[in-house]
Amino acid sequence: SHQDVMKDLKLFKSDIERDATTIVFESLPKKVLLLDKLFHQTEAGRLKAEYKVEPFPTPVVLPTGVIPVNSRIREIIDQIKAEICDMISDLSTLRAWIRLNTPKIEDGNNFGVEVQEEILTMLSRGRVSGLSVLQVVSKYYSRRAKLLSDMRKRPNIEEYASAAKDLDERQFIHLAQSVCDLRNNYALLYDKITKNKEKLVKPKSSHELAYF
Image 1: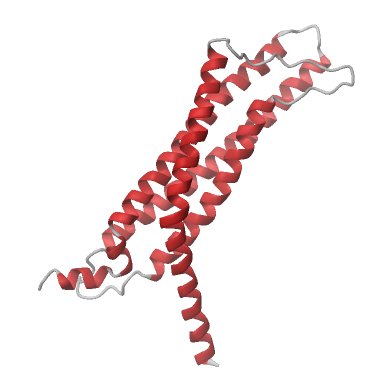
Image 2: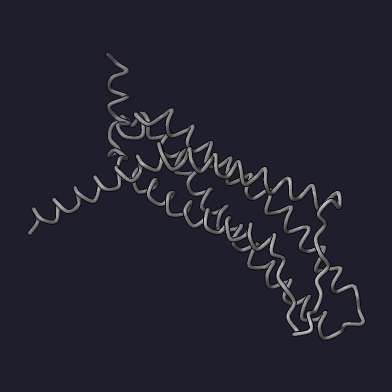
């Protein structure tokens, strides 16, 4: 019946509100701290590689014919991919929460809507940024696989191994910057939402109260 549908929709909105509140006040702060720690670990690893304290190994073909992955890069990629998947899910929930609290446009009485739109733009940019990192990771694996395949076919040409090592080094730099960007995106989003939560939940009432 219509009443059952409306009841389910109300329950859905309540669930979104609960999940969004958990994301803003629990998940986002934890993510900022976790990503900050990961960034410093990644940056330390990058510097060690740059100054040859712990340089990246040059890829070699094992007697079995296998060419090992760069385990240091694989580990960071796995962590970043997990964080991006979490981020995309969180951003989708926050986007739905804000949209469900967008007031009906009437008589220009929409104070706070501009704040909602600004945060929605931040959410969209965060999603696009996360997806672009995943695309870069995919391209990295494809390019590395091609180089290593050529290296195995032409073992007398050392430049293939050097090119693969150089690719690893550049990818590591990119990953460190990606972790930094993810951390900053979460921090800015947390700051913006917590400072404007009232406008996000009740944008019109904020306008109406301003006249009294």
